[in-house]
Image 1: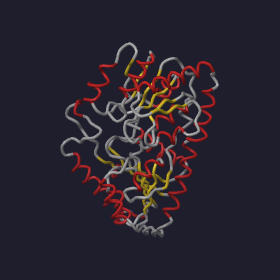
Image 2: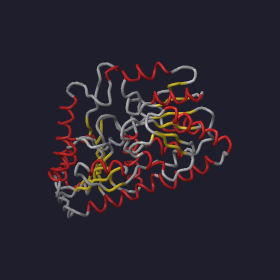
Image 3: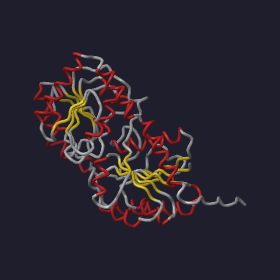
Image 4: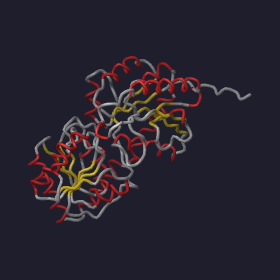
Length: 370
């Protein structure tokens, strides 16, 4: 297939990944290319894979002050620049429609959804977030065109269905050739974006309650939150190590006794859960959104009520002790994660969806070369 993959524009697709969404799209492009598909990427400037298609580069936000950087706000002028870039990408797409069979859309911008109607090209949009009003409006506009929605969890699909957008469920996967089993250890770990809705400060509190050491890894997505809630809790028993490349993050997680996952929002999936399980590391998590779906059938896991720090501390301590008593639990956990969450399994399903959607529109003839 000839596929145009459209990524979110806020952060480039490169390591260390800005978050689970960026990691997922990076893996998608890499896997599709390895399968022999002709893949073009539309993503933020500085992304990997953009070298052969710079015309589909989108602007990345540039902050004048580091402390202003945010996962929820944009710098002045960025929204207009992004809108112009999507319009330019659409003009190129319409002019070169013959180059693509299908669009694999992961953007949080509404434009790529509308392209299914405006450019008469099949689009598969993956829903990575709870419902967003601009995307709902674009979905209504694209109704009746060759467009298909897929969601990363049943919880996410239900949320969008309540707003009138139906989606097939295709959970995310992890590359279990790169996320390998680790030996475990005594410290605890938390990884992800350091933002209020991910609540790493509650993981630190749980570790403190249990008398355990914890290491926090990830990109700071909200500087004020980090300075007010995370930094004051750091010390000898709680260290922050920054954003790590995948191999270093795998080692950190794989050398930990237990991973804590602490969403305080309707978590669409929770890629860090699958990553930790692939290393054999047990997971204690707040049960909200799609978390229970990722944990389902997995040994070495525990789910507690969101926000219950004491219950999380007890669950994590029990998992850590279980790992000390029965070292094979890491082998069983890793085996189950490969069976349920391996990227190769998930992406073969997505490959079939892309192929089927592409066939909904008759192929265009390629203009003759004079």
